[in-house]
Length: 227
Figure 1 (cartoon, rainbow, N blue to C red):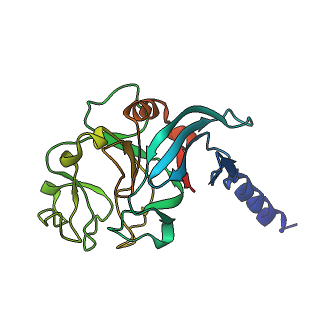
Figure 2: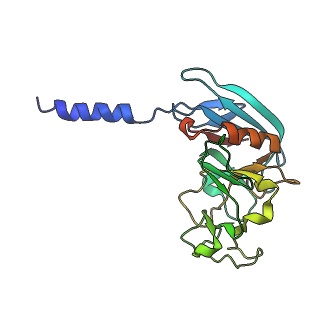
Figure 3: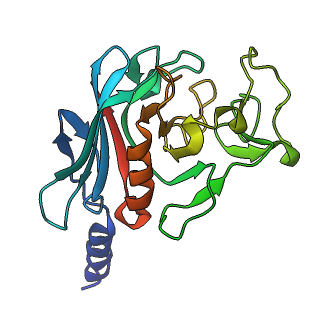
């Protein structure tokens, strides 16, 4: 009866494996696991305009839309499949991405559940393709990237203090967490600026304030971007 042991091992692995529970919400295909109970959908409307909706569900229950805005923004370069995105094109990647943390200009609040980092002088989002910290949050005092490159340079990084209005609340997405060079860095869900983004998704300030209060890592939140 020695075959019982491997069968029991396989059975335990099957239980531990995530169960996929994909859905289509507002016409956007969302790739999730059964444990995901918070979703932000970004539905392209026209040009760089999008409808942004926050969805939630109870275990085993249906998805319910809780908040929605029609003044969402996407990149000036249009939308593109994530695997084909290139840095500097102003395109927004299509697909589903985790929402693991956020940063901004305010002091930490006890109401926030996502890990948070307050912007301070010298903070950058690294877009230097030669850096080991590509697509990571880093202060220039830590070194490891060419923070001094001018904004016109293809490998210049984004100085976060230059974007106080849109980055008042900026939720990080998992796009290109594997650090594929030249694919692009710093795709966030942030507060609306004056027009299109450079590839991020943005929404009115009140919605971002709401999202950073309700998003909970235990509920495995994701953002899904679609046409």
